[in-house]
Image 1 (cartoon, rainbow, N blue to C red):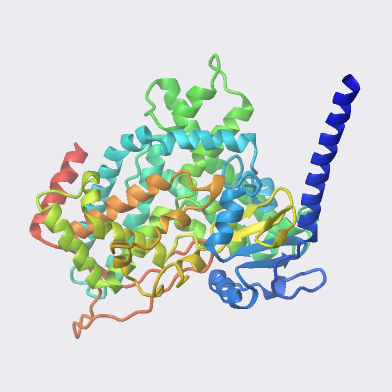
Image 2 (image 1 turned 90 degrees about the vertical axis):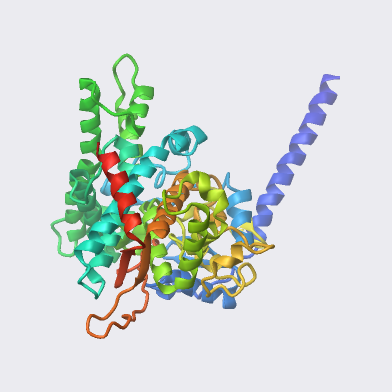
Amino acid sequence: MTGVVISLLLVVLTFVFYTVWRSRDGYRNLPLPPGPSRLPFIGSAHKLPLRYQQQIFNDWRNVHGDIIYVQIFNKPAIVLNSVEAMEDLLNKRSGNSSDRPRTILITEIIGYTNNITVMPYSDQWRRQRRWFQTAIQSTSALQSYVPLQRRETVRLLAAFVDASQRHKNDQTGYQTGQEVFAGLKRYGGALMMDIAYGHSVLSLDDEFVVLSERAIAGIAEAGAAAASLIDFFPILRYIPAWLPGAHVMAKAAAVRKLTRQMIDAPYERVHASLNQGTARPCFLTTLLDECTVDGVISDYDKEDVKGAASLVYAGTYPAFRNLCSHLKNYIAGTDTTATALTSSMLALVLYPDAQRKAQEEIDAVVGTERLPEFEDRALLPYVEALVKEVLRWNPPAPLAIPHKVAEEDKCGSYAIPAGTMIIPNIWAVMRDPMIYADPDTFRPERFTSASPERDPRNYVFGFGRRICPGQAFADSSSWLAIARILATFDVTKAHDPATGAEIAFEPEFISGMISHVLPFPFEVKPRSNRAVGLIRELQSEYAE
Protein backbone atom coordinates (compact mmCIF):
# COMPACT_ATOMS: atom_id res chain seq x y z
CA MET A 1 0.00 0.00 0.00
CA THR A 2 2.84 2.32 0.85
CA GLY A 3 4.44 1.61 -2.51
CA VAL A 4 1.23 2.54 -4.34
CA VAL A 5 1.02 5.86 -2.46
CA ILE A 6 4.63 6.65 -3.25
CA SER A 7 4.08 5.78 -6.93
CA LEU A 8 1.01 8.01 -7.13
CA LEU A 9 2.91 10.83 -5.42
CA LEU A 10 5.76 10.49 -7.94
CA VAL A 11 3.28 10.60 -10.83
CA VAL A 12 1.65 13.76 -9.45
CA LEU A 13 5.00 15.46 -8.83
CA THR A 14 6.19 14.50 -12.30
CA PHE A 15 3.03 15.95 -13.84
CA VAL A 16 3.34 19.19 -11.86
CA PHE A 17 7.01 19.53 -12.77
CA TYR A 18 6.27 18.86 -16.43
CA THR A 19 3.41 21.38 -16.46
CA VAL A 20 5.53 24.10 -14.88
CA TRP A 21 8.43 23.27 -17.18
CA ARG A 22 6.22 23.43 -20.25
CA SER A 23 4.72 26.70 -19.05
CA ARG A 24 8.11 28.29 -18.54
CA ASP A 25 9.36 26.83 -21.77
CA GLY A 26 6.29 28.25 -23.42
CA TYR A 27 7.34 31.73 -22.28
CA ARG A 28 10.73 31.13 -23.81
CA ASN A 29 9.14 30.04 -27.07
CA LEU A 30 7.03 33.17 -27.25
CA PRO A 31 8.49 36.00 -29.31
CA LEU A 32 9.76 39.22 -27.78
CA PRO A 33 7.52 42.22 -28.39
CA PRO A 34 8.34 44.24 -31.50
CA GLY A 35 10.38 47.40 -31.10
CA PRO A 36 13.00 49.69 -32.62
CA SER A 37 16.05 48.18 -34.26
CA ARG A 38 18.98 47.15 -32.07
CA LEU A 39 22.73 47.44 -32.56
CA PRO A 40 25.53 45.44 -30.92
CA PHE A 41 26.53 46.66 -27.46
CA ILE A 42 24.16 49.69 -27.33
CA GLY A 43 20.95 47.89 -28.26
CA SER A 44 18.19 50.43 -28.97
CA ALA A 45 19.79 53.22 -26.93
CA HIS A 46 20.44 55.26 -30.07
CA LYS A 47 16.70 55.24 -30.82
CA LEU A 48 15.54 56.53 -27.44
CA PRO A 49 14.21 60.09 -27.49
CA LEU A 50 15.89 62.58 -25.17
CA ARG A 51 12.76 64.71 -24.66
CA TYR A 52 9.05 64.01 -24.23
CA GLN A 53 9.59 60.26 -24.32
CA GLN A 54 5.93 59.57 -23.59
CA GLN A 55 4.85 61.20 -26.86
CA ILE A 56 7.45 59.38 -28.96
CA PHE A 57 6.57 56.06 -27.32
CA ASN A 58 2.94 56.74 -28.18
CA ASP A 59 3.93 57.41 -31.80
CA TRP A 60 5.82 54.10 -31.82
CA ARG A 61 2.52 52.45 -30.93
CA ASN A 62 1.37 53.02 -34.51
CA VAL A 63 4.43 51.12 -35.75
CA HIS A 64 5.12 48.48 -33.13
CA GLY A 65 1.85 48.11 -31.21
CA ASP A 66 0.80 48.44 -27.57
CA ILE A 67 3.76 46.49 -26.16
CA ILE A 68 7.21 47.64 -27.28
CA TYR A 69 10.58 46.01 -26.56
CA VAL A 70 13.57 48.30 -26.08
CA GLN A 71 17.12 47.09 -25.37
CA ILE A 72 19.06 49.77 -23.44
CA PHE A 73 22.67 48.63 -23.61
CA ASN A 74 22.55 45.33 -21.72
CA LYS A 75 19.18 45.91 -20.05
CA PRO A 76 15.81 44.81 -21.51
CA ALA A 77 12.85 47.17 -21.17
CA ILE A 78 9.19 47.03 -22.15
CA VAL A 79 7.02 50.09 -22.85
CA LEU A 80 3.30 49.56 -22.24
CA ASN A 81 1.04 51.86 -24.23
CA SER A 82 -2.40 50.46 -23.37
CA VAL A 83 -4.59 50.02 -20.31
CA GLU A 84 -5.09 46.35 -21.11
CA ALA A 85 -1.34 45.65 -21.08
CA MET A 86 -0.83 47.61 -17.84
CA GLU A 87 -3.65 45.87 -16.05
CA ASP A 88 -2.52 42.46 -17.29
CA LEU A 89 1.14 42.75 -16.30
CA LEU A 90 1.13 45.28 -13.45
CA ASN A 91 -2.19 44.57 -11.72
CA LYS A 92 -3.09 40.93 -12.38
CA ARG A 93 0.56 39.80 -12.24
CA SER A 94 1.69 42.25 -9.59
CA GLY A 95 3.33 39.51 -7.55
CA ASN A 96 6.01 39.24 -10.24
CA SER A 97 6.03 42.82 -11.54
CA SER A 98 6.43 44.85 -8.35
CA ASP A 99 10.22 44.99 -8.25
CA ARG A 100 12.33 48.05 -9.09
CA PRO A 101 15.34 48.34 -11.39
CA ARG A 102 18.68 48.52 -9.57
CA THR A 103 19.85 52.11 -9.08
CA ILE A 104 23.53 52.05 -8.31
CA LEU A 105 24.23 55.78 -8.57
CA ILE A 106 21.35 56.94 -6.39
CA THR A 107 21.21 54.20 -3.78
CA GLU A 108 24.64 52.64 -3.53
CA ILE A 109 26.88 55.62 -4.32
CA ILE A 110 24.89 58.69 -3.26
CA GLY A 111 23.13 56.82 -0.48
CA TYR A 112 19.50 57.73 -1.05
CA THR A 113 18.20 54.45 0.33
CA ASN A 114 15.75 52.86 2.74
CA ASN A 115 12.56 54.13 1.14
CA ILE A 116 9.85 52.29 -0.71
CA THR A 117 10.25 54.26 -3.92
CA VAL A 118 13.66 52.85 -4.74
CA MET A 119 13.95 49.65 -2.73
CA PRO A 120 13.31 46.24 -4.30
CA TYR A 121 10.17 44.27 -3.59
CA SER A 122 11.08 42.57 -0.33
CA ASP A 123 10.14 42.09 3.31
CA GLN A 124 11.72 45.48 4.04
CA TRP A 125 9.53 47.08 1.36
CA ARG A 126 6.41 45.39 2.78
CA ARG A 127 7.26 46.67 6.24
CA GLN A 128 7.59 50.27 5.08
CA ARG A 129 4.51 49.95 2.91
CA ARG A 130 2.56 48.99 6.04
CA TRP A 131 3.92 52.08 7.79
CA PHE A 132 2.69 54.32 4.99
CA GLN A 133 -0.68 52.62 4.76
CA THR A 134 -1.25 53.23 8.45
CA ALA A 135 0.04 56.80 8.37
CA ILE A 136 -1.52 58.26 5.22
CA GLN A 137 -3.94 55.74 3.78
CA SER A 138 -6.27 54.64 6.56
CA THR A 139 -9.59 56.41 7.03
CA SER A 140 -8.70 57.49 10.56
CA ALA A 141 -5.35 58.94 9.44
CA LEU A 142 -6.92 60.87 6.57
CA GLN A 143 -9.55 62.30 8.88
CA SER A 144 -6.88 63.40 11.34
CA TYR A 145 -5.18 65.47 8.64
CA VAL A 146 -8.27 67.53 7.76
CA PRO A 147 -7.41 70.37 10.21
CA LEU A 148 -3.91 70.51 8.71
CA GLN A 149 -5.29 70.70 5.17
CA ARG A 150 -7.75 73.44 6.17
CA ARG A 151 -5.00 75.49 7.83
CA GLU A 152 -2.56 75.17 4.95
CA THR A 153 -5.17 76.06 2.32
CA VAL A 154 -5.94 79.25 4.26
CA ARG A 155 -2.24 80.09 4.34
CA LEU A 156 -2.13 79.43 0.60
CA LEU A 157 -5.07 81.75 -0.07
CA ALA A 158 -3.54 84.43 2.14
CA ALA A 159 -0.33 84.22 0.11
CA PHE A 160 -2.43 84.70 -3.05
CA VAL A 161 -4.01 87.82 -1.55
CA ASP A 162 -0.58 89.17 -0.65
CA ALA A 163 0.72 88.48 -4.15
CA SER A 164 -2.24 90.15 -5.83
CA GLN A 165 -1.93 93.25 -3.63
CA ARG A 166 1.82 93.43 -3.95
CA HIS A 167 1.74 93.29 -7.72
CA LYS A 168 -1.57 94.97 -8.55
CA ASN A 169 0.31 97.50 -10.65
CA ASP A 170 2.46 94.84 -12.30
CA GLN A 171 0.07 94.01 -15.11
CA THR A 172 2.52 91.70 -16.89
CA GLY A 173 1.63 89.03 -14.38
CA TYR A 174 5.10 87.54 -14.21
CA GLN A 175 5.74 88.40 -10.56
CA THR A 176 2.24 87.37 -9.53
CA GLY A 177 2.55 84.05 -11.33
CA GLN A 178 5.95 83.31 -9.78
CA GLU A 179 4.66 84.02 -6.27
CA VAL A 180 1.60 81.84 -6.84
CA PHE A 181 3.81 78.98 -7.98
CA ALA A 182 5.98 79.48 -4.89
CA GLY A 183 2.85 79.40 -2.72
CA LEU A 184 1.71 76.13 -4.28
CA LYS A 185 5.16 74.66 -3.77
CA ARG A 186 5.13 75.69 -0.10
CA TYR A 187 1.63 74.25 0.32
CA GLY A 188 2.67 70.75 -0.78
CA GLY A 189 5.87 70.89 1.23
CA ALA A 190 4.18 72.20 4.37
CA LEU A 191 1.62 69.38 4.36
CA MET A 192 4.22 66.66 4.09
CA MET A 193 6.77 68.23 6.45
CA ASP A 194 4.11 68.51 9.13
CA ILE A 195 3.08 64.89 8.65
CA ALA A 196 6.65 63.58 8.51
CA TYR A 197 8.26 65.58 11.32
CA GLY A 198 5.58 67.69 13.00
CA HIS A 199 7.39 70.75 11.65
CA SER A 200 5.52 73.79 10.30
CA VAL A 201 6.83 75.34 7.09
CA LEU A 202 5.98 79.03 6.85
CA SER A 203 8.16 79.89 3.87
CA LEU A 204 10.50 78.36 1.32
CA ASP A 205 13.40 79.72 3.39
CA ASP A 206 12.70 77.06 6.02
CA GLU A 207 15.96 75.36 7.01
CA PHE A 208 14.77 71.85 6.19
CA VAL A 209 13.32 72.94 2.86
CA VAL A 210 16.62 74.61 1.92
CA LEU A 211 18.55 71.52 2.98
CA SER A 212 16.31 69.30 0.90
CA GLU A 213 16.64 71.58 -2.13
CA ARG A 214 20.45 71.59 -1.84
CA ALA A 215 20.64 67.83 -1.57
CA ILE A 216 18.27 67.12 -4.44
CA ALA A 217 19.88 69.77 -6.63
CA GLY A 218 23.20 68.07 -5.92
CA ILE A 219 21.80 64.74 -7.01
CA ALA A 220 20.55 66.41 -10.18
CA GLU A 221 23.97 67.85 -10.95
CA ALA A 222 25.67 64.54 -10.28
CA GLY A 223 23.13 62.78 -12.44
CA ALA A 224 24.48 63.75 -15.83
CA ALA A 225 23.89 61.38 -18.74
CA ALA A 226 27.35 59.84 -18.29
CA ALA A 227 26.65 59.19 -14.63
CA SER A 228 23.55 57.17 -15.39
CA LEU A 229 25.75 54.75 -17.34
CA ILE A 230 26.92 53.43 -13.97
CA ASP A 231 23.55 51.74 -13.58
CA PHE A 232 24.15 49.83 -16.80
CA PHE A 233 27.86 49.22 -16.30
CA PRO A 234 28.51 48.93 -12.54
CA ILE A 235 32.26 48.54 -13.04
CA LEU A 236 32.41 52.28 -13.81
CA ARG A 237 31.89 53.02 -10.12
CA TYR A 238 35.41 51.83 -9.40
CA ILE A 239 37.09 54.38 -11.66
CA PRO A 240 39.18 56.63 -9.35
CA ALA A 241 37.67 60.08 -8.91
CA TRP A 242 41.01 61.74 -9.72
CA LEU A 243 41.15 60.37 -13.27
CA PRO A 244 40.22 62.76 -16.11
CA GLY A 245 36.53 62.39 -16.95
CA ALA A 246 35.76 60.73 -13.60
CA HIS A 247 34.51 63.93 -11.96
CA VAL A 248 31.10 62.31 -11.53
CA MET A 249 32.41 60.16 -8.71
CA ALA A 250 33.95 63.17 -6.97
CA LYS A 251 30.66 65.04 -7.25
CA ALA A 252 28.75 61.99 -6.00
CA ALA A 253 30.92 61.90 -2.87
CA ALA A 254 30.00 65.52 -2.07
CA VAL A 255 26.32 64.90 -2.79
CA ARG A 256 26.38 61.87 -0.53
CA LYS A 257 27.24 64.18 2.40
CA LEU A 258 24.32 66.49 1.55
CA THR A 259 21.99 63.53 1.24
CA ARG A 260 22.99 62.26 4.66
CA GLN A 261 22.32 65.70 6.12
CA MET A 262 18.88 65.77 4.48
CA ILE A 263 18.07 62.39 6.02
CA ASP A 264 19.75 62.86 9.41
CA ALA A 265 19.05 66.50 10.38
CA PRO A 266 15.26 66.39 10.82
CA TYR A 267 15.51 62.98 12.47
CA GLU A 268 17.96 64.30 15.04
CA ARG A 269 15.73 67.33 15.71
CA VAL A 270 12.68 65.15 16.38
CA HIS A 271 14.70 62.65 18.41
CA ALA A 272 16.02 65.46 20.63
CA SER A 273 12.50 66.84 21.06
CA LEU A 274 11.30 63.41 22.14
CA ASN A 275 13.96 63.26 24.82
CA GLN A 276 12.87 66.71 26.02
CA GLY A 277 9.19 65.78 25.90
CA THR A 278 8.37 68.55 23.42
CA ALA A 279 7.98 66.58 20.17
CA ARG A 280 4.72 66.91 18.26
CA PRO A 281 3.09 63.63 17.19
CA CYS A 282 4.05 62.81 13.61
CA PHE A 283 4.99 59.98 11.26
CA LEU A 284 8.51 59.81 12.66
CA THR A 285 7.50 59.75 16.34
CA THR A 286 5.06 56.93 15.59
CA LEU A 287 7.79 54.87 13.89
CA LEU A 288 10.26 55.55 16.69
CA ASP A 289 7.69 54.40 19.23
CA GLU A 290 7.08 51.19 17.27
CA CYS A 291 10.75 50.36 16.72
CA THR A 292 12.18 51.32 20.12
CA VAL A 293 12.55 48.46 22.60
CA ASP A 294 13.55 49.23 26.18
CA GLY A 295 14.63 52.71 25.12
CA VAL A 296 16.91 51.43 22.35
CA ILE A 297 16.44 51.38 18.58
CA SER A 298 18.68 49.16 16.44
CA ASP A 299 20.89 50.66 13.73
CA TYR A 300 18.88 48.77 11.09
CA ASP A 301 15.55 50.12 12.34
CA LYS A 302 16.99 53.62 12.72
CA GLU A 303 18.06 53.75 9.06
CA ASP A 304 14.73 52.32 7.95
CA VAL A 305 12.82 54.93 9.96
CA LYS A 306 15.00 57.77 8.68
CA GLY A 307 14.57 56.67 5.07
CA ALA A 308 10.80 56.34 5.34
CA ALA A 309 10.37 59.76 6.96
CA SER A 310 12.71 61.48 4.50
CA LEU A 311 10.69 60.16 1.56
CA VAL A 312 7.55 61.84 2.86
CA TYR A 313 9.03 65.33 2.58
CA ALA A 314 12.08 65.06 0.30
CA GLY A 315 10.07 63.68 -2.57
CA THR A 316 7.70 66.64 -2.42
CA TYR A 317 9.92 69.40 -3.73
CA PRO A 318 10.03 70.26 -7.41
CA ALA A 319 13.83 70.33 -7.41
CA PHE A 320 13.41 66.73 -8.52
CA ARG A 321 12.23 68.01 -11.87
CA ASN A 322 15.80 68.96 -12.77
CA LEU A 323 17.01 65.38 -12.66
CA CYS A 324 17.82 63.70 -15.93
CA SER A 325 14.99 61.43 -17.02
CA HIS A 326 16.87 58.27 -16.09
CA LEU A 327 17.21 59.37 -12.47
CA LYS A 328 13.64 60.63 -12.32
CA ASN A 329 12.53 57.07 -12.90
CA TYR A 330 13.36 56.28 -9.33
CA ILE A 331 12.95 59.17 -6.94
CA ALA A 332 10.36 61.62 -8.22
CA GLY A 333 7.18 59.82 -7.43
CA THR A 334 5.68 62.01 -4.74
CA ASP A 335 5.33 65.40 -6.41
CA THR A 336 1.74 64.76 -7.49
CA THR A 337 0.06 67.51 -5.45
CA ALA A 338 2.30 70.39 -6.56
CA THR A 339 2.15 69.31 -10.20
CA ALA A 340 -1.63 68.89 -10.13
CA LEU A 341 -2.06 72.37 -8.64
CA THR A 342 0.24 74.17 -11.07
CA SER A 343 -1.44 72.31 -13.93
CA SER A 344 -4.78 73.49 -12.54
CA MET A 345 -3.60 77.12 -12.64
CA LEU A 346 -2.65 76.69 -16.28
CA ALA A 347 -5.97 75.04 -17.13
CA LEU A 348 -7.99 77.79 -15.43
CA VAL A 349 -6.10 80.41 -17.43
CA LEU A 350 -6.44 78.62 -20.75
CA TYR A 351 -10.05 77.52 -20.29
CA PRO A 352 -11.98 80.35 -18.56
CA ASP A 353 -15.36 78.79 -19.39
CA ALA A 354 -14.50 75.76 -17.24
CA GLN A 355 -13.40 78.08 -14.44
CA ARG A 356 -16.65 80.04 -14.66
CA LYS A 357 -18.81 76.88 -14.52
CA ALA A 358 -16.94 75.61 -11.47
CA GLN A 359 -17.31 78.97 -9.71
CA GLU A 360 -21.02 79.14 -10.45
CA GLU A 361 -21.47 75.67 -8.96
CA ILE A 362 -19.53 76.62 -5.82
CA ASP A 363 -21.50 79.86 -5.41
CA ALA A 364 -24.79 77.96 -5.69
CA VAL A 365 -23.85 75.20 -3.23
CA VAL A 366 -21.45 76.86 -0.78
CA GLY A 367 -22.30 80.54 -1.09
CA THR A 368 -19.87 83.33 -0.31
CA GLU A 369 -19.94 83.38 3.49
CA ARG A 370 -17.62 80.41 3.97
CA LEU A 371 -15.02 78.34 2.14
CA PRO A 372 -15.72 74.93 0.56
CA GLU A 373 -15.24 71.96 2.88
CA PHE A 374 -14.80 68.25 2.24
CA GLU A 375 -18.45 67.76 3.16
CA ASP A 376 -19.34 69.77 0.03
CA ARG A 377 -17.38 67.55 -2.35
CA ALA A 378 -20.21 65.22 -3.30
CA LEU A 379 -22.40 68.27 -4.03
CA LEU A 380 -19.87 69.78 -6.46
CA PRO A 381 -19.76 67.34 -9.40
CA TYR A 382 -18.36 69.86 -11.89
CA VAL A 383 -15.47 70.80 -9.59
CA GLU A 384 -14.81 67.07 -9.18
CA ALA A 385 -14.83 66.67 -12.95
CA LEU A 386 -12.44 69.60 -13.32
CA VAL A 387 -9.96 67.96 -10.93
CA LYS A 388 -10.16 64.70 -12.89
CA GLU A 389 -9.71 66.45 -16.22
CA VAL A 390 -6.58 68.24 -15.02
CA LEU A 391 -5.04 64.87 -14.11
CA ARG A 392 -6.01 63.43 -17.48
CA TRP A 393 -4.88 66.48 -19.43
CA ASN A 394 -1.44 66.60 -17.80
CA PRO A 395 -0.76 63.42 -15.81
CA PRO A 396 1.90 64.33 -13.22
CA ALA A 397 4.10 61.30 -13.97
CA PRO A 398 3.46 60.53 -17.65
CA LEU A 399 5.71 57.44 -17.62
CA ALA A 400 5.12 56.54 -13.97
CA ILE A 401 8.00 54.92 -12.08
CA PRO A 402 9.34 51.79 -13.81
CA HIS A 403 8.64 48.34 -12.44
CA LYS A 404 10.78 45.26 -12.97
CA VAL A 405 9.69 41.65 -13.41
CA ALA A 406 11.49 39.32 -11.04
CA GLU A 407 11.03 36.22 -13.18
CA GLU A 408 10.30 35.64 -16.83
CA ASP A 409 6.69 36.33 -17.69
CA LYS A 410 4.43 37.13 -20.58
CA CYS A 411 2.20 39.98 -21.64
CA GLY A 412 -0.39 39.19 -24.24
CA SER A 413 1.32 36.88 -26.73
CA TYR A 414 4.84 38.11 -25.98
CA ALA A 415 7.62 36.91 -23.69
CA ILE A 416 8.96 39.19 -20.98
CA PRO A 417 12.51 38.16 -19.95
CA ALA A 418 13.41 38.04 -16.25
CA GLY A 419 14.75 41.35 -14.98
CA THR A 420 12.98 43.41 -17.65
CA MET A 421 12.19 47.02 -16.76
CA ILE A 422 8.50 47.84 -17.34
CA ILE A 423 7.61 51.42 -18.33
CA PRO A 424 3.86 52.22 -18.24
CA ASN A 425 3.08 55.07 -20.63
CA ILE A 426 0.25 56.69 -18.69
CA TRP A 427 0.28 59.70 -21.02
CA ALA A 428 -0.62 57.41 -23.94
CA VAL A 429 -3.63 56.09 -22.04
CA MET A 430 -4.80 59.63 -21.24
CA ARG A 431 -4.60 60.44 -24.97
CA ASP A 432 -6.21 57.23 -26.20
CA PRO A 433 -9.32 58.18 -28.27
CA MET A 434 -10.78 54.73 -27.57
CA ILE A 435 -10.92 55.66 -23.87
CA TYR A 436 -11.33 59.45 -23.94
CA ALA A 437 -13.26 61.03 -26.79
CA ASP A 438 -11.47 63.98 -28.39
CA PRO A 439 -8.55 63.49 -25.96
CA ASP A 440 -6.62 66.65 -26.89
CA THR A 441 -9.55 68.85 -25.78
CA PHE A 442 -9.83 69.99 -22.18
CA ARG A 443 -13.42 69.05 -21.35
CA PRO A 444 -14.46 68.32 -17.74
CA GLU A 445 -17.96 67.49 -18.98
CA ARG A 446 -16.67 64.08 -20.09
CA PHE A 447 -16.91 63.05 -16.41
CA THR A 448 -20.38 64.48 -15.70
CA SER A 449 -22.31 62.92 -18.58
CA ALA A 450 -24.81 60.09 -18.19
CA SER A 451 -22.04 57.71 -19.29
CA PRO A 452 -18.89 59.22 -17.77
CA GLU A 453 -15.50 58.27 -19.14
CA ARG A 454 -12.96 56.36 -17.05
CA ASP A 455 -11.60 58.01 -13.93
CA PRO A 456 -7.94 58.93 -14.65
CA ARG A 457 -7.12 58.50 -10.95
CA ASN A 458 -7.26 54.76 -11.60
CA TYR A 459 -4.05 55.11 -13.62
CA VAL A 460 -2.07 58.24 -12.73
CA PHE A 461 -1.19 57.00 -9.23
CA GLY A 462 0.45 53.80 -10.41
CA PHE A 463 -0.39 50.13 -10.51
CA GLY A 464 -0.50 46.94 -8.51
CA ARG A 465 1.37 46.71 -5.25
CA ARG A 466 3.42 49.78 -6.19
CA ILE A 467 0.42 52.09 -6.37
CA CYS A 468 1.10 55.35 -4.52
CA PRO A 469 0.12 54.91 -0.84
CA GLY A 470 -0.52 58.64 -0.60
CA GLN A 471 -3.10 58.68 -3.39
CA ALA A 472 -6.09 59.56 -1.21
CA PHE A 473 -4.23 62.29 0.68
CA ALA A 474 -2.81 63.84 -2.50
CA ASP A 475 -6.25 63.76 -4.12
CA SER A 476 -8.02 65.36 -1.17
CA SER A 477 -5.29 67.99 -0.69
CA SER A 478 -5.49 68.97 -4.35
CA TRP A 479 -9.28 69.08 -4.33
CA LEU A 480 -9.56 71.31 -1.25
CA ALA A 481 -6.96 73.75 -2.57
CA ILE A 482 -8.55 73.97 -6.03
CA ALA A 483 -12.09 74.34 -4.66
CA ARG A 484 -11.05 77.11 -2.30
CA ILE A 485 -9.04 78.95 -4.97
CA LEU A 486 -12.04 78.83 -7.30
CA ALA A 487 -14.32 80.11 -4.53
CA THR A 488 -12.20 83.17 -3.78
CA PHE A 489 -10.09 84.06 -6.83
CA ASP A 490 -10.26 84.66 -10.56
CA VAL A 491 -7.25 83.17 -12.34
CA THR A 492 -6.68 84.92 -15.68
CA LYS A 493 -4.14 85.69 -18.33
CA ALA A 494 -1.89 88.65 -17.64
CA HIS A 495 -2.44 91.91 -19.49
CA ASP A 496 -0.14 94.22 -21.37
CA PRO A 497 0.22 97.38 -19.21
CA ALA A 498 0.23 99.64 -22.29
CA THR A 499 -2.70 98.23 -24.26
CA GLY A 500 -4.61 96.18 -21.71
CA ALA A 501 -4.59 93.26 -24.13
CA GLU A 502 -4.11 89.74 -22.83
CA ILE A 503 -0.55 88.48 -23.05
CA ALA A 504 -0.42 85.39 -25.25
CA PHE A 505 1.87 82.49 -24.38
CA GLU A 506 2.41 78.86 -25.34
CA PRO A 507 2.12 76.45 -22.42
CA GLU A 508 5.26 74.40 -21.85
CA PHE A 509 5.97 71.37 -19.71
CA ILE A 510 9.22 70.03 -18.34
CA SER A 511 10.31 66.97 -20.29
CA GLY A 512 10.93 64.02 -18.02
CA MET A 513 9.27 61.70 -15.58
CA ILE A 514 7.45 64.55 -13.81
CA SER A 515 5.47 66.84 -16.14
CA HIS A 516 5.97 70.16 -14.35
CA VAL A 517 4.39 73.26 -15.85
CA LEU A 518 6.95 75.90 -16.77
CA PRO A 519 6.14 79.32 -15.23
CA PHE A 520 3.91 81.52 -17.37
CA PRO A 521 2.41 85.02 -16.98
CA PHE A 522 -0.94 85.08 -15.20
CA GLU A 523 -2.85 86.97 -12.54
CA VAL A 524 -4.85 85.97 -9.50
CA LYS A 525 -7.40 88.51 -8.30
CA PRO A 526 -9.82 88.17 -5.38
CA ARG A 527 -13.36 87.74 -6.61
CA SER A 528 -14.68 90.22 -4.02
CA ASN A 529 -13.78 92.21 -0.94
CA ARG A 530 -15.82 89.68 1.03
CA ALA A 531 -13.50 86.90 -0.19
CA VAL A 532 -10.47 88.85 1.06
CA GLY A 533 -12.16 89.51 4.39
CA LEU A 534 -13.06 85.84 4.83
CA ILE A 535 -9.48 84.78 4.12
CA ARG A 536 -8.07 87.34 6.54
CA GLU A 537 -10.52 86.28 9.27
CA LEU A 538 -9.47 82.64 8.95
CA GLN A 539 -5.82 83.61 8.72
CA SER A 540 -6.02 85.43 12.03
CA GLU A 541 -7.76 82.46 13.65
CA TYR A 542 -4.94 80.11 12.64
CA ALA A 543 -2.36 82.62 13.81
CA GLU A 544 -3.74 82.58 17.35
